Length: 241
Image (cartoon, rainbow, N blue to C red; front, side):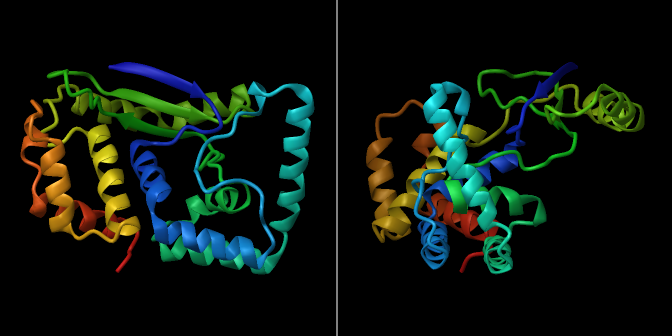
């Protein structure tokens, strides 16, 4: 068992990463964000979702960007805009933990931390080249958390996460498509389905051609049925018709 502690403002779990990556390519989500922006005269930023790191900019640019952010944060005091953000979350089957992150997307096209509190989970190893591995206990701690609060949280919660990690101390290699290959595969077929109006059969012809010389076992098995299942999973995840 390995312990990893992240002091960060943008740590999310694996399911959150999947949701963010699929929202990136969802045409319906893009249109809904654009609709809200037009309604409230929000014009800055692109539709690409990213975590903006101001530290990489020189001081004048950093200050200018911060000024834009401060101005847009004032807009969030508008109850009608809050209602639009809440409605957007509900439409895509996102619970209240996502409200602040979706508001950031609407205002700045960025994703910040999804949880201001200490957040912990047992992380499985999805490296497709590893047959046996030990889970890690991952802790996301906001940068302004006090030492006393961290100590108290560990006293109250450490036992259950340690037990969960020990119960899953031996993991077999994941069957099927590896997690991060899934995300890239889903993104590609969602783009074809939504932006090029291609049906599963048409997509399968493209993907089968793409993978015809692949040595990957799962890529060799790509077919129309698999594509239908992945598109259904995407729609079910966000409660889309």
